[in-house]
Length: 388
Image (tube, rainbow, N blue to C red):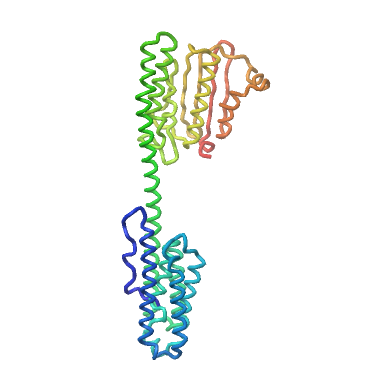
């Protein structure tokens, strides 16, 4: 029976990017040392066995198997589940053969099995490979074989089985936590690298594009200077808000959600007014981006059809079942049926850029207009659709 009186308690090593490699190395070394211990124990006691030759044959096979799987137990990618199942078979075979070869008197006195603590390496391998659940199964199988074929339901057997279970569960749980922590650290490093790159791009934009726009606004009179000023304000808002969606702020919701107000705020300008609630309006990140893009397309329609001097108002409404964004302008409007005529003529700008986006989100876009009364488009995204 595998008794963990001197198991690899220090197998989990800190340092480096991963705790797995030191753990696997420790398990591989433990198996070799445990094999040497089993050979030494049997060499000292084989004369007392009923069939000592079969014991030597088993230990010879155990030496070959341990050396053949040495590299496999040193890496999680090389150690496959069939290898672990075969390893568990070797451990159980050692227990069963011990019950046949050893004398009843020695077994009753607490004699160790042929593989002794080598069987613990199987449990540790299962723990490192798959976590505490496979390790528990391996420990129960080895402990059950020991009870069934080597001494029965004794205090020592129960004690050793409990030790195997504790060791397997502890190592498996530590490995699961280590992998989760490692994944979190990797993601954090990626976000940090992305943040540094965004900061570099922001500096380049600030030192180049923004200065050119500011200079154009000051030195070029008329419409071109006004447009340069609007673009400068929009770009500055984009640099401080929508450009960095991965960074969390006090207004951000749970992971994967985005405050729609932050995406609509950069659209405000000299002739565009944005009205939004005072609390975050959260939608899944992709849905929020698509809805903001639809709003931008609606504003582009205002500029193209109502003229650069037209004013526009954006109203964001947050309701329990849906999020609604209305875009209204003071342009000339259009007659009823004009959108249907445009679709029939093959002009699909509104259908694709606004209605198509809302349809993909499970929402809708409704247009209201009359000649001389401007246009209002009401875009609604149900929260279930946004989550989808």
